[in-house]
Image (cartoon, rainbow, N blue to C red; front, side):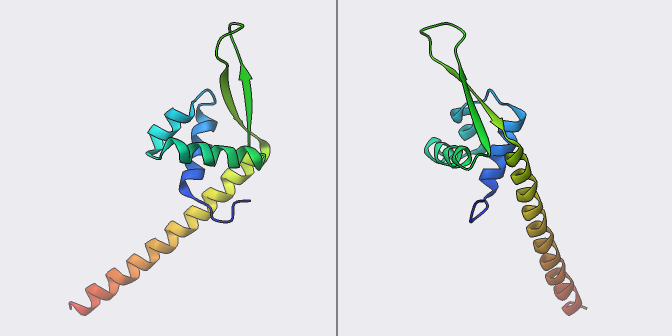
Length: 108
């Protein structure tokens, strides 16, 4: 779905899954990314159908509140992203392990 999977995208999906009533500002602060980037990533997730937005107001004439919901496709995408990053971390681990063994082998 995304040409270049990012850990930020995965983090946004996980945050929305955990807290549907969150705001873009809260997500931005929690993840340490700009509000503009958060908005951009959320819009992309919504356009791809991975997240749905529900607007509601508790009082007529007041500012609407927004809840974000992970769709079935969003949940599937989350799993694919998690698998992608787990494989990436595993590859990094084995590379570091191999470098460590080479360094320790040359010190003997």
